[in-house]
Length: 68
Image 1 (tube, rainbow, N blue to C red):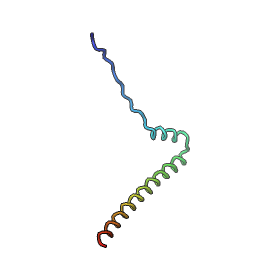
Image 2: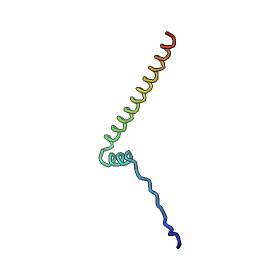
Image 3: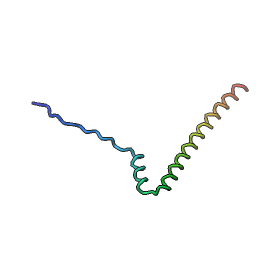
């Protein structure tokens, strides 16, 4: 008995994010697309700043606890 040879083709499955971006680009005008991208960038920056504030607060509290 001979083993059957078969070729396997791998194709990348797009992520949900990629699919949503494709739909967004089709449905939204250029201005709306830019506005949404800018808004999302702003959200990410706000999250980064909040994380930095929290980390700074923890450091300040740790230093205050050691000196008192």
